[in-house]
Length: 136
Image (cartoon, one colour):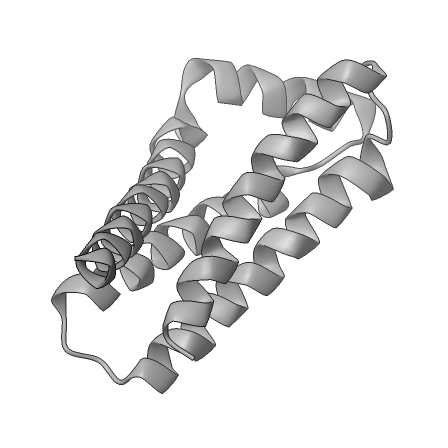
């Protein structure tokens, strides 16, 4: 009984994290050419800042990550393949955290908001780690 419950929780966690990445990637790609994004790119060009490449890379990698994590549930793949794939997702998410929370926006806009956003991304990071450990 306990083993079934544990498997069910891994299954649900993997669906939730896979959908999170898949939808985050889709949203980033779909909204890339929206009016708001075009205006943002216009002001970034005026101010000399250009995050377009980073945003599209994150969106595409999130989409691929979601497909890999969800695919692990429904497509027969080797555990080692899924372990390596989720390890890569883990590394990219950790780099995203380091880039956005430490290198660029340290303690911005204020400490509480920064900690809340950081903690949410850490929950995602640890969820990916748990999924990775499942395939080890």
